[in-house]
Length: 255
Length: 274
Image (tube, rainbow over all chains, first blue to last red; front, top):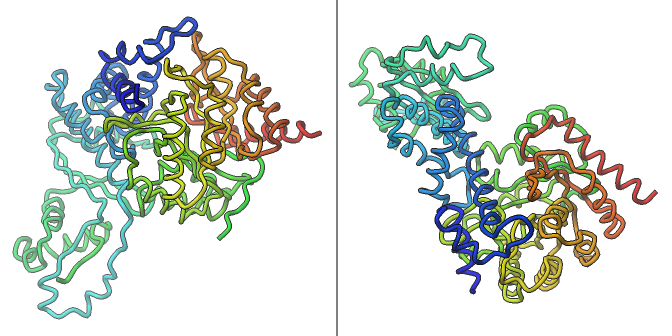
C-alpha cells in the first residue's frame, strides 16, 4: 500500500471513530492489545492533546459546564472540525459556534458569550506587536489635517457587546482576584460591553460605559475627527481624554 | 554568528517558568525552545523566546514539520521557522522522524511511519528539502510508538540509521522513547542503542512515561523512571556525554524540581566516566 493511502487511512481514524477498524487492518496485533486498540491509543492521544489545548483556551467555560460535558463536546467538535493548520494557536475559534449550536446549551447561551470572551483573550494575546504612534506629532497638524485624523485602537483590541455580564462571570472564576463577585450573586440579565487588548506582555480586560463603548466602536469604524466631533459633540474631549489615558487609542493616521 | 555551545544537561522551556527564569536568571546550561509555540512573527510569545535566547544557549525543537508526511510541506511553517531561527540563533533545530498531517488534517500528534525502503527514500528526500529550506542540518528524533504496521520490513533502528546516513542529518536519541517503544513492541532497548551509529547522535532526550498496564504511554508528565536512567547510562557509555535535555509537558513541576531532574542527568554524566 502506498504511504499516502496508509496515512489517509490512519488520520481518518483519528477523527472518525467509524474508521478505526479499517485503519486497524494496517497494523500488527501484538501482545494483549488488538490492532484496533493500538490505533485507538493514537486517537485518544491526538484528542487528548487537542482537549488539553481547548481547556487552556476556555477555562471558564470548562468550569461552567463541567469536565465531562466539556470533554464530550470538545471530542465531538474535533471530529467535526479537525485541525487543518500546523499552527495550533489557529485552532479553536469554531468551538464558540459549535457551543452556540449545541442543543443542551440553548437555554444557557450566556455560556457561549463567555466562550466568545475567552477566544478574544486568546486572539488578543497572539496578535502581532505594533508600534504606537508618536502623538506629539499631532501638534504640528493644520486644522484641515486634524479634521481628517483617524485614530486606531490597539491591533489586539476586541470590543464585545454582550447581553450577559461576561466580564463579571469571568472575574468570578479567577482565583487571584480577592474581591471577585460570587457567581450566584451575578444577575445574568445584565448586559456588559467589554474591551480586551494587550499592552506589551499584559492582557487588559475591562467593562465600558455605554458612551465609551459607542466612542470606541466609532473609532474602530475609522471615523474621522470631524465625524467624531459631529457625533459626540461636547462629550468628545472627555471621551478622548479617557481613551488616551487608558491606552485604548494606540495610533493615528492622517490620510 | 556562531551559536553558543550546547553543553551538559538542560531543560525544555515551558511557559510557566519563563517569568521566573528571566527574573532570576538561574544557572541553566541550555534551554530547548518548543518552536511551534513561538511561530507568530512579532508576537509577545516570540519576544519571550528572543529574550531567553539573549541569556541562555538554546536549541529549537518542533513537532510540526511533518517530515514523513505525503502532503506537501507547509511553506508558511518553514518560513516562520527559518525566521525564528534567524532571531534565536539556536545551536540546532530538531523535529521528529514521524508524520503529523495527511488529507489536509493535522493531528498535532507524532504518528509513526512504516519502516520500509520506500519510506526511507521518501523521508530522506523530505529531510533534504527541509534542510535546504532552513539552510542548516537537521536533527531528527525517534518517537515513542504504540503500533507497528503490517507493511514494515525493517526495525526502527535500521530505519533511523539509514535515514540519518542518506539524508546527512543528525539524531536526537530520546532514551525514554526507546524504552517505551521497546516495552510496547517487545524488543531489547539495548539492541536499539547498540545499532545506532555513534557519529550520528547529537543529543539525548529524557522524560517520564505512564504505565497504562497494557502499554507504556509517553506522557512527559512524570520524573524519568529508573529503567530509563539505566538505559541512559548505557547510552552515555556508548555515545559519550552528549547534551541531554529533560522534557516535561504535563503536570509541569516547579522550575526547581525540573532543574533537580536535570541535575540527576548531570550526575549520570559524571558517574558514567568516573
